[in-house]
Amino acid sequence: MSLFAKLSSYDDRSARLAGIGLMLLSIFMFSVGDAMGKFIVATYSVGQLLWLRACAALLVLLPMVWKRRADFRHLERPWLQLLRVTLSTVEVAAFFLATVYLPLADVITYYLAGPIFVTAMSGLLLGEHVGWRRWTAILVGFCGVLIALRPSAQTISWPAMIALGGSLSFAVLM
Image (cartoon, rainbow, N blue to C red; front, side):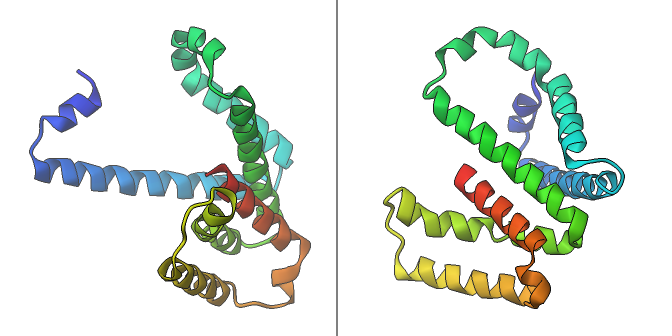
């Protein structure tokens, strides 16, 4: 029986608690991964870190990829999939390159602006309607990012622009 089948057999309260626990675990693991990445790029290059991450992901995903290998010949819009892979690689590389020069908290603050960019770009790139309430939320969120970053000369440095570019790459990816 799969994990999801077991979870669906529990009552609503147990399922909610499991969801909360899994969300907290995932946030913790992402934070640990970011901190380990910052630690690793102090010694190794960003390219070596990306290679290490790719190899680790391949080890974890290889059984699933092998099992579904025939489906890869029938991908819908393979060039779009390639674009997503490229944007994801650029985003991760920019994140860790920015952590070489900036504090981890500042780089994460740039990345937390990603949902703001997604909402703003949805109207421009996808033609979705973004009403005045969402534009107001975008403006308030952007002000929050500015407050968290405490703008200074360092905010407009090359490492900051790398982090901002990575955040934009993440937004386009999403």
